Figure 1 (cartoon, rainbow, N blue to C red):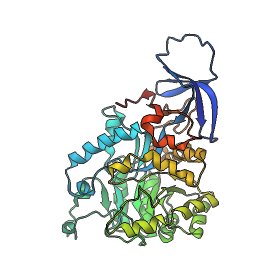
Figure 2 (cartoon, rainbow, N blue to C red; figure 1 turned 180 degrees about the vertical axis):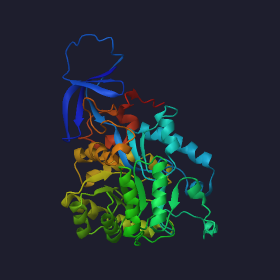
Figure 3 (tube, helix red, strand yellow; figure 1 turned 90 degrees about the vertical axis):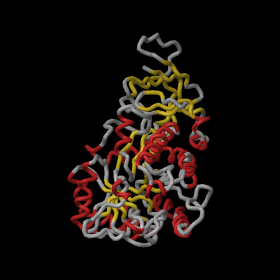
Figure 4 (cartoon, rainbow, N blue to C red; figure 1 turned 120 degrees about the vertical axis):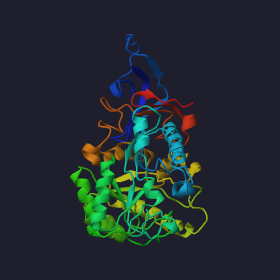
Length: 418
């Protein structure tokens, strides 16, 4: 048993600090929150005592839009590189993700089933992973990473390198989308990810295009619902978002070019919105190249998107969607801190804990980690971060995990940060 004594606790449900408490952790769960005792009797079960004075205990952070296989690797390694190299970098990246205090990620595309298994079995350290597996894309869609020599497919339907690597599944028409969805679920996806519109990082599709028909998306939604889970989609524009809502999709990723009518539709249908604080700042990617114009168009809508989400009371999740940039991958906490442009520090921290945990529960019985996440409560899973100071007073502490996090715990075990 581990006891953290005299610590302030962030109540992620209420969005406020409480305590102080003595928090006891055993066998992977939070066993007790008690008022501090001046002289608590010696308990032989307590193996370690941590002084929480002047510190704040928060739930382990959750990134609801992460790519564990692609966050820190060059695009060329995904498109044509060796799979062993891809997985080796993902193992290192998973350890670093955990050491930044992100104890859980919702992985929204990539070959992460093996990585998840290795983490769950204790082979290598890393966060809990809610995997989407390969994202599903139409030909010419945001997930179509085929090289010029891989197009067209030909009568035999040969798979491209990205498909064989488990990064994407190219599927056109209802029958192909249904087959692809069932195969991805068979491989262990906790939710499905579809590409419903153009993207910034892709070279073939303009940002404004819509992808997939309502009927095609409904095929994926039907497959997901039969498995007790849901579909989320990559989409920026009102048309792409409205098509997804009509098809029964439960979550929108990005949506930065949304209009007010479509925001109202999300609220009406109780659809989640996973927004990212993409801004024209030092973290903007790509900084140069042919996709820079698309990136600038997208970030121009960020402020309005967040304001529409707030005005319409839409359920908003926090995610970073870092791709192909090792430096940017280190800035997960800094991205979270940027939410104070639109929210209070408490609301920002709620998004990355309690709110994101709510979104994760949409996968129902496909949830690979039954138990309460995103809260510091008796009976909850013991994923915790001990912060030197108060992040509600100084949100930038979350951007400096090496110096500001006194301890990171996942599943009741203190994370080795050496």
